[in-house]
Image (cartoon, rainbow, N blue to C red; front, side, top):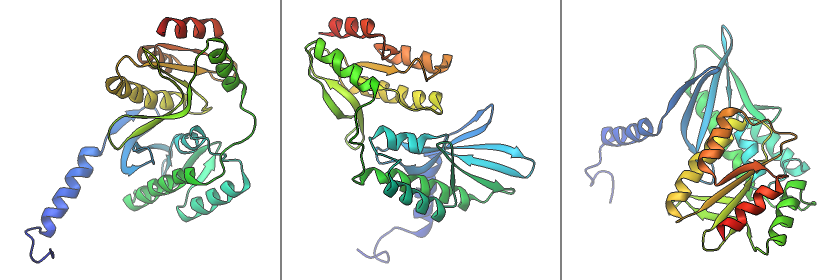
Length: 262
């Protein structure tokens, strides 16, 4: 059916699209500036979230708060490999962004140009799709993973690694370990070193939706007490949404929780 033959008019299409974008747009004030969503998503269906913070009277810093590279790492992608680094450099150059200690950002001049913001978001989405490249880590597991595997073995439990759980028909979440039993358990190791509160906020929403979709699901989140400082907000999310939120080295607590779920 051609456009001429249909009842669809350009104004109707414009109204439809702007209505969708308006509904998906969320803006929140923070002590550092504004955090807002974009009509662009990562491969798992989660919207790209950006932060605008004013650093000079005439300039604004636009950033992803460290979420993009953290997401890639969480999928097992080796962002330190030479080939991935080359892809990152190319995509950063194409979308006019750069990396600062794991955070992807760009300086914008006032007055703001919405095109710059959209190109930045598209760049983050493009970088997130490096997930599909065959550069995932094959090196020895880190200490946290080894500890979890030992706990599972000692408990006589079998877990699926990097298992995908459905939030909706089109959205899935990959968890580090999934144990199928009378009361299923999902174990996720918090590995990010930057923007812990943002990562925990994202996982809080994930756990909430997963528990609504999987009867009696018990989320367990573990972190490194030596290298990760858990702020009160992140701890509140972890303890409110998880059956257990603790350091990976608190093996007695993990053993007790897994035993109670069987």
